[in-house]
Length: 265
Image 1: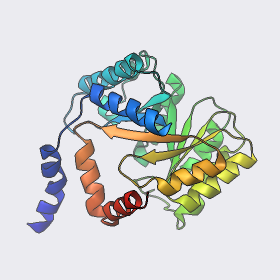
Image 2: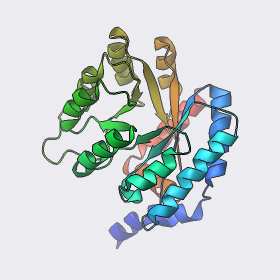
Image 3: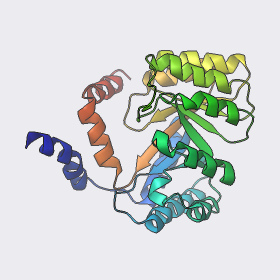
């Protein structure tokens, strides 16, 4: 009974919290960009039973709102499964003129996501937890698409790396030397320092990615030392609060970490 209640809690609590519209989320991003000088990634988190066409419409509304508001350096982070991996829906979002980057999925969905990204010219996230990501990075190294390197939420079912930081830096090294941008998405300042140093030594354009709700003070200090921009990932939508609450329950140190970071400013 307690186990069932634990897994139901994120959905129950999430339903009680306000859900931003695409227009409100875009406005919040413009304010963040104006006050922090950050670049923006805006991502819609759908609810599990949401129709693909409705998910696409949310992204289209976000893209239009971003275009109508004060111009900022922005992209849309898109999860392909809620869109049914439908190229036509992705094309309808891309037609609004805001660059797209495909979020990381499960390892089993990676080939389909990579094929979509290549066909549509989208960016893509590469999870360091997947052994295949080093090879994917080598394939994408000379491509023009943007790449975000993340630790990854889904484990590699075949060969989970023992050292997550080492695996992360292996993916970064495979991308070093490319002319298109690499986003180092991590809140670990030591890992960010090492990854940005590798990219700087090879002359690779880089950004530091930071996620809404997580501490950013130390990460921003690293970005400042390396003279690279910060890209702020702003998730929203009906699936965001359940996801955020689930992460807080799985990693109870995160709220404390964020509070300490805020107090220290």
